[in-house]
Structures are given as C-alpha cells and as structure tokens.
Image (cartoon, rainbow, N blue to C red; front, side):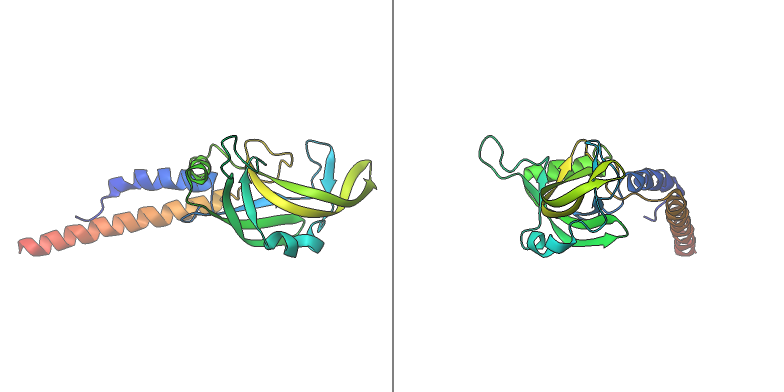
Length: 193
C-alpha cells in the first residue's frame, strides 16, 4: 500500500526530533565538546587549547557517562567513542559512535528524545593565565568527553538543525509522501481498468 498524505504528521514529529538532535544517524551523534566561552565555573579554554594533545586523546577516544569512570557495581561507564574530532573556529566538534551497552542505549535514547543535549570535557590543565579578568586554559590535555545532564560550558551541546533546514526537510518529506500517495492512486486506477 502506498503511503498516504496523512503520514505527514509522522514526518513532522520526526522533524521535531531532528530539531532537538541532528546527528543521531544510526548510533552516531555530532556535538560540541568545548568552546572558548566563559563557563559556569568562571573560566574558559583559549581557542585551540586542546590541539597539542589531541593525538593522545584519539589513542583512546572514550565518551563517558557523566565523567564517571566506573559504576558502583564495577562496570565501565563508556557509552561510546569519538570517530571524528576537529576544531571548527573556536569549537572543538566531535562525532561519536554509541556503544551497544544498555547504559549507552539509555543515553542515546535521552539524546534522541531531546531530554539530554549537553557534553563536558575531562582534562588535565597544562598552562593558563588570566585574560580580561577570566582564567583561561591556554593548553590542556583532553582525557575524555562526557555526556552530562548539565555541562559547565553552555555551548557544549549536541548539534541541532536550523529552523530553515527543518522547514526544508518537512517540505521535502511531505512532498514525497504526497507524490507516493498520488502514484498509489494511479496504480490502483490502472489495476481496475
């Protein structure tokens, strides 16, 4: 049976989820790990502060659940691994692949449903100084990236879809559903003849 135009409601619902979290493509998610914005702790990272040590992180590119290295029952809290990590301007952007563990699936569901969006970095400070009255990490070693309920850096979030992109996606999906419905009607009419 051909899809009907009534499937447009499902398309809109799917598009709303895309607005909350773009990047969940299968089990992958794209997000910002850190920027140079002043964080909730009153400090910031200079643009490129992690650059000198990225190769060290990429040797073991873990994504943890809320900076927890081990659960109370001894299980690891790795929820995935980073598959791409690069600077885009002052933003350290990454793509992650979720693991197939129950804990990772719980976090993935929270992101898919829009309940979680935040990330945070675990790091070792290497050097820093006060710039414009704000302590600024000029170099730091990235140890891990964590999915967190609330991050220190307000800009360290899963990437979303712009309103224009959302409208374009909805229009395309609705158009395709309408076209499929029309084709279905033509096929049914030709079968009756």
